[in-house]
Image (cartoon, rainbow, N blue to C red; front, side, top):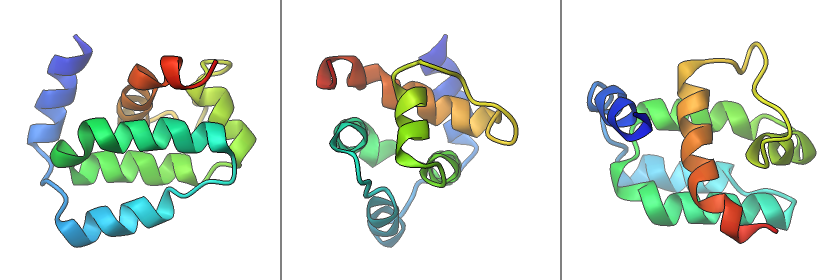
Length: 104
């Protein structure tokens, strides 16, 4: 279900161009190695298909403090308002897909 809904939602949002991807990479630099591992794997896996919708969700997550972001990535907690949006949930699901093997 996650892939189908992700694909359907992403189809309505334009793909990011090279400049937008570069800015997004820059904005996603983190202070905690654990967060960087999740983010690096996210870009490795999804970069060619990232849309403006994904960028919006990712930017909202990047506004968090490192420890708060890590808690979300490790499923210690779920997004609360104002982060409780479809875009954030979609990107968070994508970030979590590969992260379970990257961080013990």
